Image 1: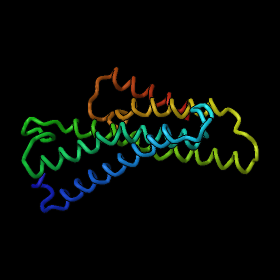
Image 2: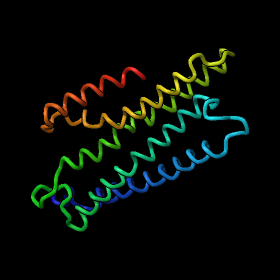
Image 3: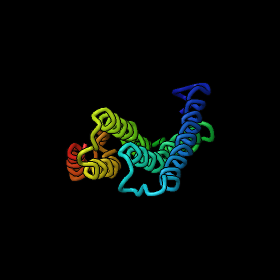
Image 4: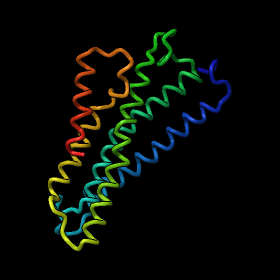
Length: 182
């Protein structure tokens, strides 16, 4: 709150994060729509290069995860400027809510950065080896699996907050499971 961070620097930071995420969300909608609607004639989804698949999956992950960070920064601004109590326990708020919303964005963000690089490297290897990529469909399915699992892992960043043992066990297993497609 303002007691611990006087001035408007934190407010401007939170607002800039929100603006940045709106831009990323708009770009991701554009990339998704372009890939799904403007492929060349004859290029079905099954024939799309791995790089396009990677960009499509990363864009879908962005569309699904960015609203969480936009919500958390907007709530933070409201807590600071309008005196709401979303995250202040003294006013009935919950600090764990901040962590859940942040990490729901933050953990998939790691894979949003990693997945396009995977597609990029696959395209480079395919081009310079002058060979068609072996296991194209398996690689695409692994990228899709990484996407699905990435959204089920955010809580592994919160093991120290006092989650029930069963929850910790589930997120530990999911954290190990993502190594299989990766």
